[in-house]
Amino acid sequence: MTKQFLVDQINAKQSYLCVGLDTDIEKLPAGLPKNKEGVIAFNKAIIDATAPYCVSYKINTAFYESQGIAGWEAMEATLAHIPSTHFTIADAKRGDIGNTSAQYAKTFFETLPFDAITVAPYMGKDSIEPFLAYQNKWTIVLGLTSNPGSQNFEQQKLANGQFLYESVLEQVASWGSPEQLMFVVGATKANDLESIRKIIPAHFLLVPGVGAQGGSLSEVTRYGKNDAVGLLINASRAIIFASSGTNFAEDAANAAKGYAAEMKALLSE
Image 1 (cartoon, rainbow, N blue to C red):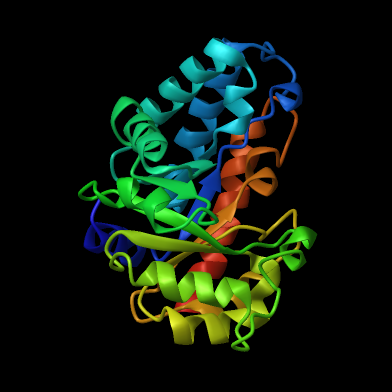
Image 2 (spheres, one colour):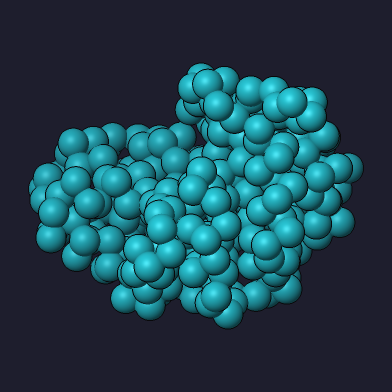
């Protein structure tokens, strides 16, 4: 998917919502079996219900990989059900030496034809280049994450006065273009978005942490939005597990609709 197509979808819907399909098999609503078929049925119902209100879906691969072959089959079936109008993200956080990263890129760009994959930048440029070799595919690099452990490395000061995450953003941005690179910035770090935008003004940001993790949608939008909106706000549990009853899809739709309505209002300010 091209950047312009994604921007057009955001403008048309006045929504920059990404629904996270972090489908925990143990949390499937009553009436659905806790197996591959149950996961697929749940995901399809969630996608059908929320598609009008979002522009993207993010599949956290850990929830599928943990189920072995059945989980991979559920992930493949889920991806196939997502409309082509929606930006698809494999939240896999890969990154390794070049020949290994090339195989990861093949896995999530060809075998499973996602639009994007999340990657960890710790091993440097040669671990990310294989992902950037694909046309109209996106590499989403971890920048400043919302977990407490981000203080261990990401928020350490370097000798030049920069935080480590700032150096990562600056260097990685030089390896590709805003047409193929995004960055992960946690919603609980909204106060840092203003300075982050000075480093990467034109790139899209994937922002998890709104909803169950307590991030503020209005603050993220205020400090993180650029001329192309430039944001994908991910909400997972707050939407897909809005209800554990038989009306789970309807409740998920209502939760997604609520986010979309708030986004439309924020974009009109």
